[in-house]
Length: 349
Image 1 (cartoon, helix red, strand yellow):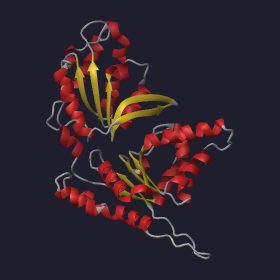
Image 2 (cartoon, rainbow, N blue to C red):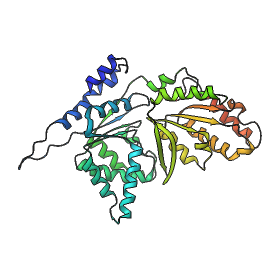
Image 3 (spheres, one colour):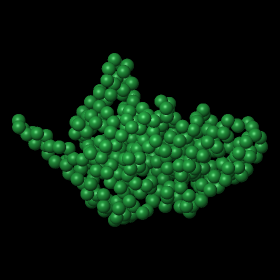
Image 4 (tube, rainbow, N blue to C red):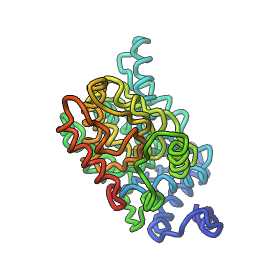
């Protein structure tokens, strides 16, 4: 992996970062252990699998990029997957097992993963749902016991996973398991590369027309490299669909998020999962779409409190989005927040 990284730096495709370079021995340790031939004999015990790796740090520090390079280096031995997508697969597998009459619905899911995978590489590990919290501990215990190696990235130190969550005390053994079976590494790069790509760029576009749509499309391409896919958040056993998502950058229309019966818990889950939201086609607000406007206010509150960077297109400037009908006074705070969120140094802290 260091060779690939150095080549990309030499080609100018990656900026040299001492913090990123410093973590290379950890990746190489795992790669070398997995590549070593396994000698089997009558009296030989299988070698202990290497410890996994849990990389945490601020957004935009290159964690996902490093994970991509690592997965490329390891090749077919690795399954690279976003953590939320993986948990959705787990829940789908458990549902199928229950339908088939299995008493322990998690067992066949774990067995299949163990059979198919030697190394699981998770991006953006975070636990926001009580159901995930209850499942993940048992699942990882089975994976570790079978010798599956886990590498994960997260914006949170392990002790802050599922922080303030319901029945969190039941989740604490899983945090200890992470510390035992994975090297916990803080990626302390001083550079926020995602912020660098946005810094100095316009983030609020009005009116909505071909020109502003093209500008937002260019920002989206720069942030995601065209690799985004639909993403589903599980919130209190419900599914919230995000049309496009990649490495913590989400894209949706006003209708996707405010034209549907979503509530505070849904917006909080989105704010937890995304560090940048591209929100398009915010209409003029008023009596005719009062419910949608109320949801928009709740969405902006959630994004603001979580310091999610907002890039959006709207029918008017913030102060003129909501000019008539009940709620105009209350919307002044939202307009003020929309203005504040446009500041170059706002968010992505």
